[in-house]
Image (tube, rainbow, N blue to C red):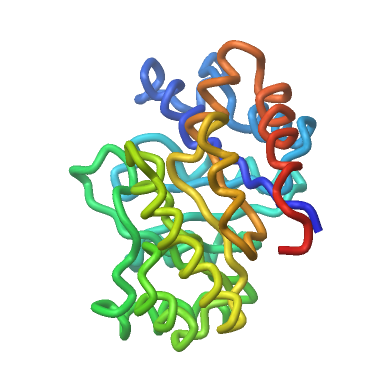
Length: 248
């Protein structure tokens, strides 16, 4: 099976909010997140990822409902574990929910969810989401203890946080950590995804990591789309992903 691509369109909303923060639903508000989702689909995307943050800095509630209604790709909702966001997930009914850490001070999600320290909270969130028919992923650092805990918490998937890999001058040590985490996730029956900081340049370095099912990529694709358009940017990323070893 080919490596799948989930396209995160949050930063399309970031650009829109730069001018239309007070009027995101105005007919003049651009760029359109729905159009971005549809263009990503046309480029070959396998799913669409959105993250409604507590401070609504980019995606708004109405955005994700429109994307779900107008784009028929599977929808992955990233969310912090708060009652407000759990309620949003229950109303939206995405195909997947990825539980992430979230602080207002960060520019973007800066690390994985500490599923060991937050075991009880995460377990309850997983149970409630799965009870609504939503598959659950946990966004975790490539730490073996966290992979083990994700399996114990009955998650369907993990998304390995690749930020340290993406930021490293010499990524070899981070690749080793990702390899070990992916192998353990597979052994524990978890679907293994990866995301954060992956771009067109560092993508091939990830091909040493086995058992990956899907990559979630946003900023790099949206950045490339400014030059060539969303459809072409997604197509180019997928072309690069074809070299991932089949069946691993």
